[in-house]
Image 1 (cartoon, rainbow, N blue to C red):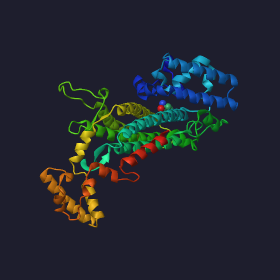
Image 2 (cartoon, rainbow, N blue to C red):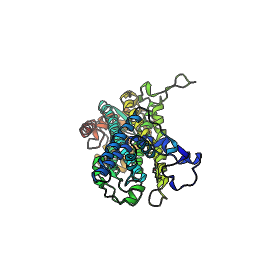
Image 3 (cartoon, helix red, strand yellow):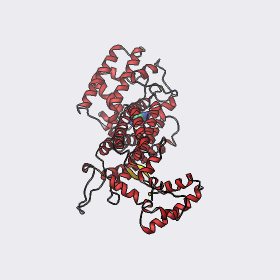
Image 4 (cartoon, rainbow, N blue to C red):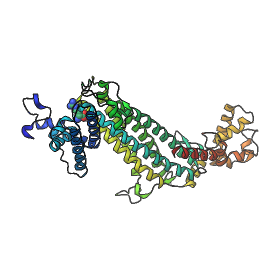
Length: 460
Ligand code: ARG
């Protein structure tokens, strides 16, 4: 640029060094806000014209010029310049080159401070809508898989030790519930994202007779930020979004951890489609669950972004500080990582092959019906703590014989409690145990089917 002259350099006596220029520029990443920057500028210009602050001719020139710039960007014809610092100044400079003085009037009653805050909010609103749709697609994939497995028994674990038999469909529906809360959280976050900063100008508002509600309406915001200092400076809405994103990733990471375990030959509960796995360059037999491992790994990176934004904000005095320029890369990467993760996840779940026999055998190995035996005795009048003790002894005995509780004879079971009768054998089966937990939220297949039904209606 001519003599390295900046838009703001009127009072400066020497140009910034190349290093400082590079250090302070954000164009390397904020160019992706361009479409929102143009939207925001067009809405601002319309308001300026409606209030008589700029002329109708200027408005037409600005709208047309910005539309042309939008096309240039889409066609990859737009030249982004580091010396123009950021997306806002790059676009403004080009507009002025295209339409002259009208372009210079666009920034009337506005600052890059309220401009960038508006751009991020528009970007985030669109991202939240995309992410919510993708979570719902993942939920649908969970429902489809759960529906096929309401009757499939698997070991329910606590401490990763076999605890009680559960329906595999029930297990999957636990993740449906987590994702449902994630959607609620993101939808709630959207309300706070969807407030208009424009009009706050640099920090104190502007002396022009602006009408902020008009701009808010034009851009689809629910309302205007109530305090100009707050509007340009806080990024709590972005932090909140990142915390929602961290929770989505945390939920997917837990499911990934399970898929990895279940896919290990020691479990053998499921197989993932080959396209989500890779082999080993040395061990020919290997099929590694790379995709779930990376989801688990990328969760760390998303959590890191949340902490980065919290740390960025925590010591900033009012109002805008350049620190805030650092909000973009963590935010963009959070959105990109989450979008890719969700897109892959919905697809991966549709390719899960289940091995019900392996699940059944694993459940048999863990004395999963011990609680059922204790409950049986308690229902016959034995105090629960005594039943617990009796069953513990019975399990010890079965362990020595290396058999399941249901393999013991009636006489053997009666060695530990005289209350045991022939009807115990129906109770000790895995199916019987699962079916007996028949209340809302329980693992009985009937309840799981009802939960799936309700969930499907809720998603529609
Ligand atoms: N690139 C800047 C950012 O991302 C835009 C706002 C600049 N404002 C300023 N007063 N220098 O925050």
